Image (tube, rainbow, N blue to C red; front, side, top):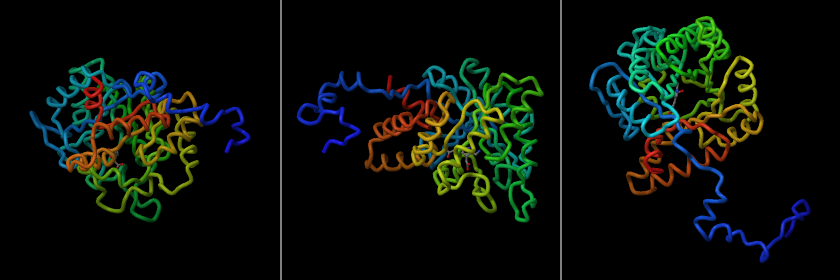
Length: 338
Ligand code: PBG
């Protein structure tokens, strides 16, 4: 039945939408979403040592790498034309303040220098957070300021700024704070600017949800929280979708250059909402470990075709509005698309 507001549209048999689908070339011609390796960012996990490649059992094909082995991966990423890589450091020693993460000789600083040497032109992004570096596994410094054992927001800000400066000094091209502390973007921007890194962009994990889809990552980064969980700082999946708008407004006001939604597939509505609401602001989405591993597991059982599901997932994320996608399939996609 024709609707009044669609009175312009003709209907069957005049209109046959299958005419747009019969010929593969027509399908390609009318297709709008093309996933390209240059829009993809590959996450890499780096740990101390030499010649180390320690497989992450919950993320087949991914491993914790020592800086020298990571350098090979980085060269491959560059050769494959990826948009960039994002580094996560896993230190030998974790402590309550995550000191390794703010040290010039820490694992992440070493890795950044090695990566820059291996492929100077590849975009090198770093995750700025504390959960990988702290013994309690939280994304900041613990405190009792709220009357409960929790992450102390304001005490964490200064350390985040310090971490970002260490990354920039070691050669990071862009920093990506993922801790969901209030004021983190502003603190990092000020810290970077004060040290002469006014040109280093901030990609903020602006709308990051407290998600069970991070499960495999916690093995990869050895960062499961040792008390409580992350729901006092990461967003509640049940919160009004518009809360994501408030997060983004604040981050932009504080100087964020790129904003991110995380996870991706269960939050396509948020990607669409933010893309529509903030046109012109580069929007990234993180296709997280759980989204990757569940497809891998099903594919291993022969229940899904990994390549097709991966490409369909990334197409959907891009179609929803994310121009940048962080994904564990980045290298595979580059190879699949030849
Ligand atoms: C926090 C961080 C996490 C991820 C990226 N940065 C974990 C968390 O918030 O618990 C998850 C990424 C993934 O699951 O792939 N530094």
